[in-house]
Image 1 (tube, rainbow, N blue to C red):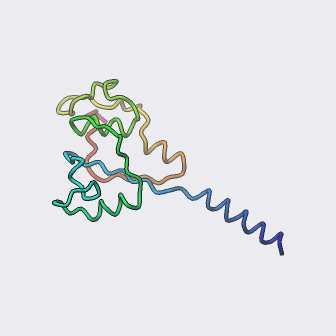
Image 2: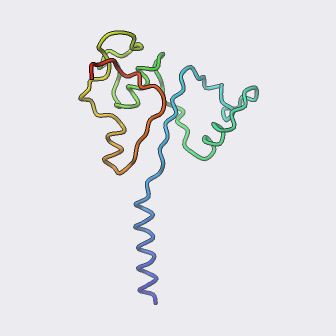
Length: 128
């Protein structure tokens, strides 16, 4: 009986260690720190964000660029945006993150995650 119980416990431990946590990135342009309820603001009601903050992980020491393209490039590549000349928003012309760059979803897929993106890409205007 104790051998069966030991095997069952080992199987549960192996299963539990194989379960990966869900990862959700929310990038909101023009959102200030004091615009969300969980930061102590009472004028603006943000119950969905408050629930996410209460049950998830809040990154409070992450610094963004003044426009969306550089911020997205940093999150997706883990590199300084000046490396790509993306310290400003992408407007016109064939520029952006190089097509041979490795992006976060590619790394996550190699680790067994399924990835999905909703929203604007805004990382370049290459001739695909």
